[in-house]
Amino acid sequence: MTSTPLLPAVDARPVEALRLQSVVKTYGSGANAVSALRGVDLVLAKGSVTAIMGPSGSGKSTLLHSAAGLDKPTSGSVHLGGTEISGLRASQLTAFRRDHVGFVFQAYNLLPALDVEENITLPLRLAGRRLDPRWLDSLLDAVGLADRRHRRPAELSGGQQQRVAIARALITRPYVVFGDEPTGALDSRSGKQVLDLLAHTAKELDQTVVVVTHDPVVASHADRVIFLADGAFAGHLDGGTPAQITDRMSALGEW
Image 1: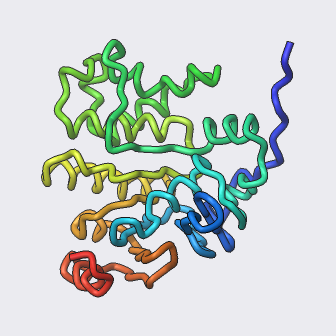
Image 2: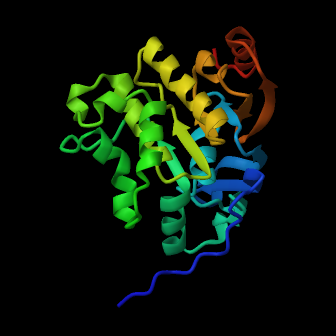
């Protein structure tokens, strides 16, 4: 009988949702080494919405994956909800990420044989955790799918499927919800609905949201836009309009 790995104590009400300190990520070695992140420092407050932008190859997805515990930094530390996840063993990190990290991919990754409710609650079943029916009802209302809870993915539009994926990411009440181009496969109307929903959950559910995007309209929904270039921070913009964000991206050579 295998024992469940013990996790470090976690602050149940952290003020800081996420902290990265001097995070470096290098792929390869010697002359073939590529530095994807070069000493990144970042602190995000609980309940904030942050967009990460930058030219192709700037380190956006690497930063997101490192912050979410999907990839381990070469050096530096990542603290999520008060716990240093960069120091956890693989088994500990898997258990922690399952319970405390939500991730919304560009591909919806819904199981076609399961209905909306079953897809949303799948992470709880996999973790052997009990479902809170009131929380499920609250999420279904928040994503506007209360009347479609028993529909299967094939019966939903692309925007509705992405809303299911967002609710699934929220069902475990994670410290942070990460999105890797979560609107990239959607039309502009559906994409706006998804970003409005993420902003709503951040404010109403005190949920921290971090998204990587290339779309200035999407980024304009965030409280702060962080710009990356060559694996390092290249500035930020608070409350920027799509035009202002486009101008900043132009300065980085994106457009």
